[in-house]
Image 1 (cartoon, rainbow, N blue to C red):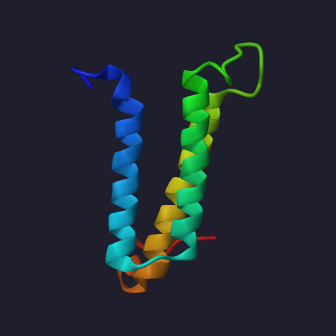
Image 2 (tube, helix red, strand yellow):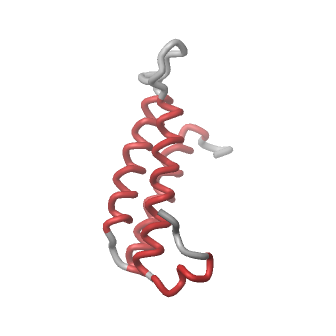
Length: 99
């Protein structure tokens, strides 16, 4: 980030993608993991659109940065669901997911 600050978003995206691919390799692909990956890709697109000021109008309810946070939270929930589905034995350590 210090040497090439313009690459921080691309590096962040690459690290997240590599982490999710490593998770898929370790525990296998599940529906929540694939869904979370798609939602995270949409969140990342909103983040990039906000950075380029395509979704950055202070008078609008539609804000790219807010979309990034909302979709990022949804992707995090889906990743937690993936952990529950992929390895149900570890779900009891942290307690069950309540619906």
